[in-house]
Amino acid sequence: MATLQRDAERTRSELLAVATEVFAEQGYSGARVDEIAERTRTTKRMIYYYFESKEGLYLAALEHAYLGIRAAERTIDVDRTDPVRAVRELAELTFDHHVSHQAFIRIVAIENVHRGEFIRRIESLRRVAQPAKNLLDEILERGRAGGVFRPEVDALDVHMVISAYCVFQIANRHTFGYLFDVDFDDPATRAHQRSVIGDVVVGWLTAPAR
Image 1 (cartoon, rainbow, N blue to C red):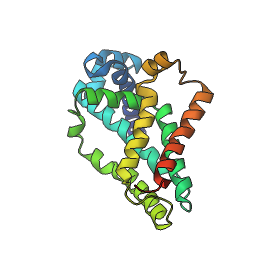
Image 2 (cartoon, rainbow, N blue to C red):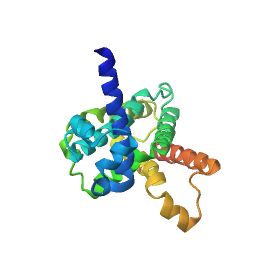
Image 3 (cartoon, helix red, strand yellow):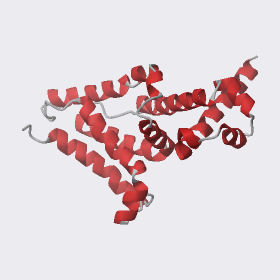
Image 4 (cartoon, one colour):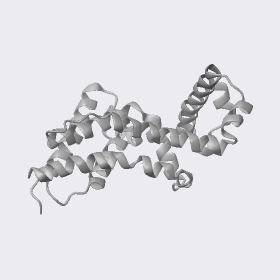
């Protein structure tokens, strides 16, 4: 029985991974369940057994993608004694995760094309997003208490700045790269961009309040 359960979990996990890639590549409307079945060497009937419909599969893939980044955030081991170092590490590690999980960024972009129509049906994602804010709240509070961070900056502001910069690396790499001759896959470019977001956040938080 345990073996069957593990096989079912492995099959479902594989389907979600491939579905995320297909939806990220082709969008909700363009993605075909037949192609997902072919890539996973399973059947359309099997996909419908697990997810009931194409929409059910998309909702599960979207949830899976968000749960992945939330799980990664929970493993971030930032320096809890130095808030400046901690916020830099958080920004740079977020950059690393986004760059290495590009399908997540693309499927989020697809969902925004649909004006968040589907994500509004996944109420649980609002709860699992909270730990990311809690970690930032903790770091910012230590920085304020130590007199090194300006007092008026909110954790959501910091989260938005980090996310915006990291998402840009994926969402705009082809257009921005062409227009300004930037190779986002070049290791030197990537290392530079990684350090920039750390510098931006630290510089902003440690600047004198206006």
